[in-house]
Picture 1 (spheres, one colour):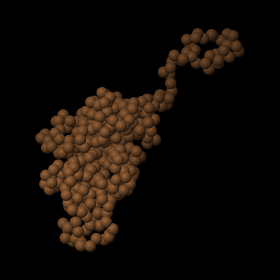
Picture 2 (spheres, one colour):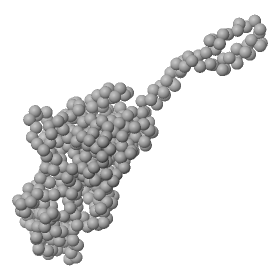
Picture 3 (spheres, one colour):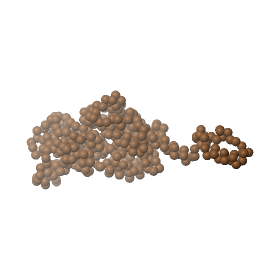
Picture 4 (cartoon, one colour):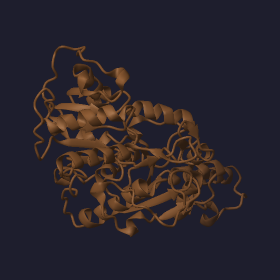
Length: 422
């Protein structure tokens, strides 16, 4: 209840002007608080609903698009995530295993597909977590992949890089599978200095060329002009994107970078008798990728005016072995380490020592995986084990989604219902 001061003053004026005017009791000078004009109520509802305590992580291929074709439910789904001005109401980040583009390019592409403005700070590419591996920034790194790989590496902080194509140009006689490309004379007479590490962004265009030259670098300890000695342990390898398959326009899944890594592992094992060792594996399903994504969710929340803690994360994807497994794996990490305040390193090659990183801004303690059926997942009851070698064995419960829905639109409506959010 609140007193209406203007009504009281007006009544005093009338009484002074006409003493016979009936006096009003104090109760009659009181208005109920809920007597608020409808347009103010609408603004108040909008203000309250803009403060969720959950954030969203979206896969792209198989969830939003199939190749370059946008899935029908995607634009409507994202219309629920923005207000009338086009600003996001819910902290939202896109986590893709693609590694052949800059974040700014992917953000622009998403904006066109969805009709919503997406900023590059909302995009996590497979290679994004590599910016945390600053000990390699000044090393001479050989890059494998396609797209603007050197520009990507420079943006991440790597200052001294050589591509597989540049290595082939300097030593063309090393690449002799395709008879039409054989050459006996190097185009560039200046030799390439010793390679210190390998960085594998994604599947290359000519697999036979990249496989041959990467093996050559490993066998010669970074100097292909020298004699093979097969040192072990070999040079550091930073690899991104472990997807065995991914969903494009075709009616069945296509090989991903995980298939290329499988070939590299098998060749190295056959030639040396030793297992290939990854210094780091980033991209989904690695915990370090979800750690990086959570930092970006928290930053996006602050940028759209949400100051309360983001305590829940929902990851929406189409792949049991990356999206679902990865989010469930991160939930295990959160449960075991963050709640116990023991910030220890990820297991094996799956990341880096997080004990040196600040956890104060990360507040999520519940992570949910949401499976959509518009991509790789075909609903088969017998799951073949397609998870990356370094993540095996996989507990079956880690491949079970928290929620299973038909499409991304149903994912959003289901999450909103669970969170009582409109």
